[in-house]
Image (cartoon, rainbow, N blue to C red; front, side, top):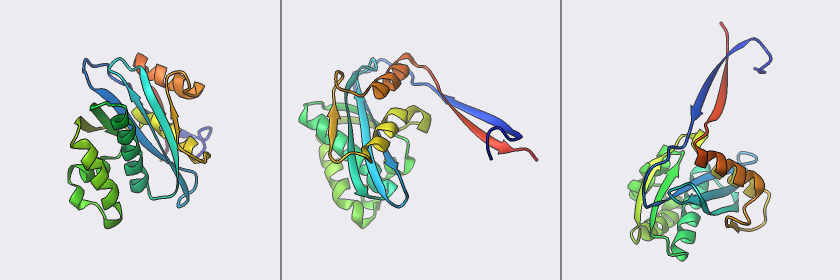
Length: 187
C-alpha cells in the first residue's frame, strides 16, 4: 500500500548506545540487487567512541543471504586481524548467523569452509558476537548494497570513506535514532 493511501503507520526507532568498552565494534551487512542475483558484503569498524577505523565493501556475485552475511563477517575479521586488532565486538542483524557461528557444525555443508575460517580467526581474538536491530545496522547495509555495483574489494579509512557513509556513521556516534515506518491497512 502506498503511504499516501489511507493506512495507519507504526514507527520503530533505534539508537546506538554509547558504552565504555575497550573493544572496537564491527557491523556487517549484506545486500542484494535482485534475489537471487548479485550480492555484496559490507562492514564498518569503529572505536568505543564511534570513530570510524575502517569500512569495506566487496561484491560477491551470486550468494544467499547467509553466505553473504558470513562473507561480510569473514572479510571484516581478516581486515581486523591483518591490522592487529584483536579485541572486537561483532554485531549482525541476522540472529541465525550468531547461532551458526556459535555452533559451526550446524551450518550447511556449503558454509563450512567459511565458518571454519571465521572460527580460526576468532580463536585468536577476544571477541563478542551480538544481535543488532536492522535500524542500527544501516551503515553496513548501505555499504553492502553499494558493493553490488563494484568490481573489487574496497577498504576505506576515515579520510577516504564516502560522504554518505561518513554522515550515517556520524549520526550513529551521536546516538540519533533511525526511524522506520511500517504501514498497515486499516480494517
